Amino acid sequence: MIRIFLTGYMGAGKTTLGKAFARKLNIPFVDLDWYIEERFHKTVGELFTERGETGFRELERTMLHEVAEFEDVIISTGGGAPCFFDNMEFMNQVGKTVFLNVHPDVLFQRLCIAKQQRPILQGKQDEELKEFITQALEKRAPYYTQAHHIFNADELESYHEIEASVDRLQELLEL
Ligand SMILES: Nc1ncnc2c1ncn2[C@@H]1O[C@H](COP(=O)(O)OP(=O)(O)O)[C@@H](O)[C@H]1O
Ligand SMILES: O=C(O)C1=C[C@@H](OP(=O)(O)O)[C@@H](O)[C@H](O)C1
Ligand SMILES: [Mg+2]
Image 1 (tube, rainbow, N blue to C red):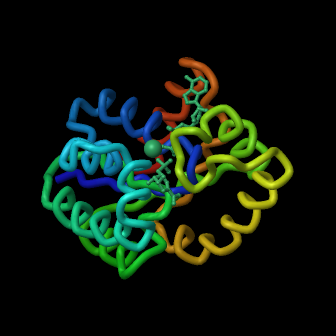
Image 2: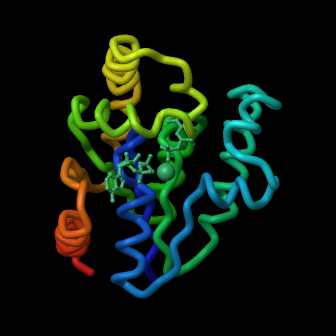
């Protein structure tokens, strides 16, 4: 039975790689953020506004436990999920975990373009965003590095790079 959790910071490529990896293995893909959005009929941004981060983290934990019941699945978590409650320990117990490690400069480039969809990053100017990413990575590293595997996901900019990363991931996980 395959149950893999992809973790890592915002912009690390959890959604992009998770989707492509599941397609390659021909098994379902679940993105925890999308799952939450569908269930509540609201965007992650709207849920943050309505419930605050504390409220979002609580429902994120509940939804994580729900998707963790699925079998033969690739699950991409939100970037914060492993860093709250005992979520990381829980994922390690019920499945295989992978930390998508990406250089902060690459994350910065990706998130400059894609910060609007991420409530935590909205409104940050370039220098502030860079500093914010560096500090957040330091704070979150102790959680992310508990993953069973660490995978370099610096190269995801083209279809070809994504396919090559999927092949490496498949090898790493011996699937
Ligand atoms: N095909 C692509 N071409 C260029 N950039 C991409 C492509 N796919 C993803 N990205 C960039 O990489 C970032 C990481 O994507 P995403 O999978 O959403 O990360 P995560 O789910 O870890 O937050 C995206 O925000 C985007 O900037
Ligand atoms: O890192 C975080 O705290 C968050 C990451 C997001 O997911 P992605 O990592 O897929 O962007 C989403 O869950 C929410 O905006 C909070
Ligand atoms: Mg995502």
